[in-house]
Image (cartoon, rainbow, N blue to C red; front, side, top):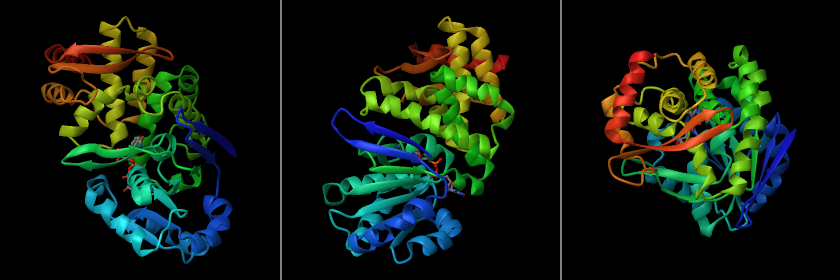
Length: 354
Ligand SMILES: NC(=O)c1ccc[n+]([C@@H]2O[C@H](COP(=O)([O-])OP(=O)(O)OC[C@H]3O[C@@H](n4cnc5c(N)ncnc54)[C@H](O)[C@@H]3O)[C@@H](O)[C@H]2O)c1
């Protein structure tokens, strides 16, 4: 068992526990408290279908609200349906909401816990690889609104996160690739994680290997969040690969988020090599790592569309400009800005070379 504690500057505390068999070991002992204190489980339709027997065996009697699965349901309707269910279940100020699912459930559940009676306890039980290494850690919660991803949200640290690698056994390969996108991003920011991934390159889809690398990824994200919980500075480094990745995701949308992040890292690593004096050998190794996970051809992108969408990214400070966080050397990144037209030319030139 590994435990990581996050204390933020405004004295919020959150503990992440990496432990196998979370239902039996961690949640079952809480059943009586959840029943008497008005606890509730929030999950999605897929996770509920797979794990309903376990929920019944270990947490029988605790009310369950299952949202329809998927990012398209990360909406105000789902949020308010959940809040209504919380009222219906009689949740009080000392109640606990357990968010059992991927990043969508975690983000909506965290926001509902932040809003209900101005804030009740939230326990995150992340069931996807992405949710374990990224979204459940750090206290960002949100819903999508007016077609804009994560437009309405709040910072609220979960009381506890139970990251159980046993959940990976039921994940489709696409969701493993999705989580690997954020893991490679962490490796592009941290030299030791990069070495671990390169050494385990042939085992990236091996569930035992993934279970081993989850705690160090959580520890890495926790280190960043401790120093900058509200993304006013350092935490922005976690956007590495995301400007290009998000732009591709916006107009294409066929792959998982993490796969777009991998495409974003490939293009931004090339930009770093061409424009920011990046270490060519290191960046080639990083690109090879991304390509070994992807099942699509990185050359098949529409540079003009990507550039026009990247120009609307929230991180940009000026119109017509694109802000990037690019990998430059092992464990080092740089903040880099380019005019939209110049960025489009670079994407096109890189696409032709790939
Ligand atoms: N808060 C943050 O800091 C942060 C960081 C990164 C991403 N996010 C958010 O996370 C979301 C993406 O999260 P995600 O990739 O986990 O997506 P998701 O929650 O939609 O889960 C992906 C799919 O896997 C299914 N699933 C979940 N666990 C499963 C399991 N154990 N076995 C089988 N199927 C399972 C879900 O039902 C869903 O269909 C996005 O909304 C993104 O904005 C938030």
